[in-house]
Amino acid sequence: ADGEGKTGALADKPTTGWLTKRSMWLKDWRKRWFVLEGNKLHFSKSPSDSPHGTIDLAACLTVKSAEDKTDKRNSFEVATPEATYYMYADTEKSKDEWIGAIGRAIVKYSNAFTNEDDYDDGESDSEDDDEEDDDE
Image 1 (cartoon, helix red, strand yellow):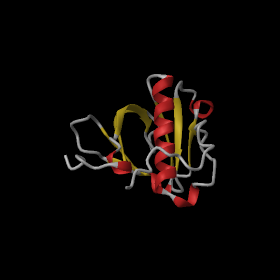
Image 2 (cartoon, one colour):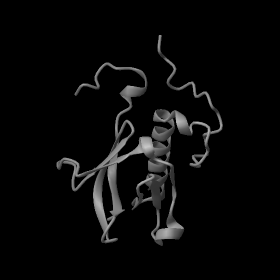
Image 3 (spheres, helix red, strand yellow):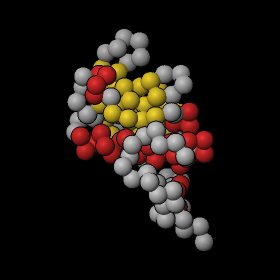
């Protein structure tokens, strides 16, 4: 509830939704509730459970479609130096929204990658987005 009255980047409301994630060890697929908050992607068993895992997007290298690797429709990967996470959405629209939101979080929170175009968002051509420059 402390997000009230803020303007600019911090007021972004978290991106939330169901994704099916591949477990790291058993390689089976499990539906998880994901919350993208700032540059942290948390996941839990349901919206009412507290997260049991977090992907730190500050360390994220790429987010991109992974259908060729997983044979799952609407799947994508989030790659960090430690691990690559695979997940899929229920619809292509949802997949695109997640890739876009995660990609924007990576760029927003990491200066190291602002000049890399590792993720293909389709709209990363302009370096100076005027969307969130209202710091007056």
